[in-house]
Amino acid sequence: MKQSLQIYSRTTQLALVLTLALLVVDPVAAANDPVSIDDIRFASLIGIPVFSSANPSPSSSPLSMAEFRGISGQSCASLDFNTFLHRFDPHELLAELRQSLLSGAQSEISNYLVALAYSAPTLVSVLEMTDRQVAARFNAFAQTCASQQVRASGLQDAERRLARASEQCFAREIARGTSPTDAYRQCSVARNFDNLTIPAALSTIDFLRRHSDLVVTPRIEFLLALLPDERIVGGNYQVRPPKTTLVSFSDALQVRSRLALDHLIDGTALSTIAECTPDSMLDPSGPACLPRSATTVVGSPAFRGARLLRPEARSIFKEALSSQIAMTAVYSDLLDLAQQISRMNLRNDSDASANEILSRQRALQDQMMHMLSQADLQLKLQESKLKLARTQLLALERAQVGLHAAADELQSKQSAPIFSLGNVLRLFQDRN
Image: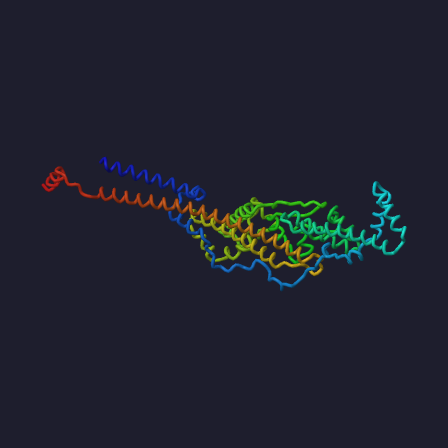
């Protein structure tokens, strides 16, 4: 009798442990009814994509044929001495000579040089003095231009961006007829190129709209908001962090997709479920919607068969499917944007250089690789949570095996005949 009580006590403890473990595995499903081990096994199995064999609809339009485009801007390093003489403004040199003759301690030396040159008025001496003045000015200009080129190839992104803006401003001013020294002073020293709308000074969205053949749709504009941006305003380099995060994007998309799955499981037609638009993508409290990549999944017969599941299993199924729909939509949008960035080129009417479009393209591709790595980390986090659920599942199955073994042992002991002297005497008494 004492042994039987011990077996009952151990059986009760095992049952209590099993019930508590079941409540820990899935609090959402356990809120209504206790979840069975079959439901937990089902939840662990659907951690992998169920509809991986489905053929998703193409998320982007066919790409056009790639073509060569771009122009070369004139840099200050491309000016030789003859070009400098042809583009040089003589009034600027005369003004400088006049200023040196009339100001400060240099006036005495300048007056002496002028008197010495014209005391023997030969053409050679006058030309030699003029040549020395022009050559000295060109050497000074070449040195400043060389420093500009060194700064353009520096390691800092801000310096490279400002140097490209200065070079593009210099080319614009030269094309408008400005002298090289004035153009360099205005573009590299004063950095007065806001009114020129040069490509290097534009933000990413403005550059893509004005100079690239990439069509900036609302969805692409929303995805570009996930990336940092930079621009030049007032001669200053400015940066902007991402307007939103990838986690907020996927979480809001999962909540909206879960609401849509609830409606579809209850019998709502798929045509009445709206597509998640970019302007409301980050609002988790909005109405139910589905991303474009999930229409094939929810329209399949397998999804309609999920209505036959029990309420607990159906809740687990919708929770897992909404998470997978959100991650699939995130990867689909990021890969589509990365493909369009790799194929973008300059527009026919763009005056930007090929170097500028390549620089923008490389910067965007680096940022897209960073975003994809963030998506991979988020996916690994979900896989880690799934491993935790499977670990609990193994513990529950282990507890269930022990519980069945204890119950079988108790049942076998209760059904086995017990031979004693009293039972034997009672047997003979019954026969009489």
